[in-house]
Length: 205
Ligand SMILES: N[C@@H](CCC(=O)N[C@@H](CS)C(=O)NCC(=O)O)C(=O)O
Image (cartoon, rainbow, N blue to C red):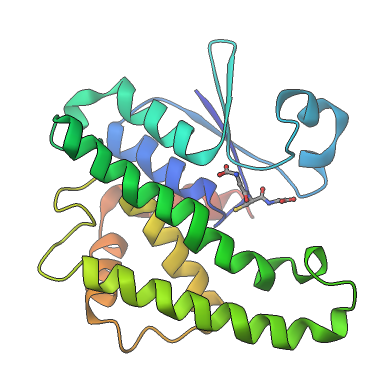
């Protein structure tokens, strides 16, 4: 498998899932320019990472990719407890992370896509930070009494980890979210997470 990624982007979730499943893979670092090239757009017309190539199959969209990786190694049990409800629970949290929480960061990362006048970026950032705080509270509540979002480790957890790293990078305080801080510590001390981060950051040098 080949995973196309930017360091620290949402593609890091897939990178971690590849580590957790032990699937042999090649990680291909791309630049913001490369993902808008004709060659890349032919494979992924949305011009985004992550993108996965597997035996001629081109897969885009993070939730689909995470699900595909997890399906290759059912023994890693990253899709819930094996019941329809368990799987739906994983998909519930992945969908929330992808369509609500991830999207709440977009005005901070790419304000020019939302505003005709960049001078309004500060107000937009402020609003986004308020929304992100609401989502973080909801995620913190979900983790009460649990080590992982759905109770057992799943493909939703690396996505949450990516989002918490963005929050740190953008100086969004996490001090009030004890469960999220515990979760972060658990992830930072996980071997697979460490391997994925080192592999992405090694590429930077
Ligand atoms: N709907 C896509 C969104 C992926 C996405 O937003 N990727 C970001 C990195 S986290 C990206 O490639 N941004 C570059 C761009 O939009 O030009 C998915 O879920 O895979």
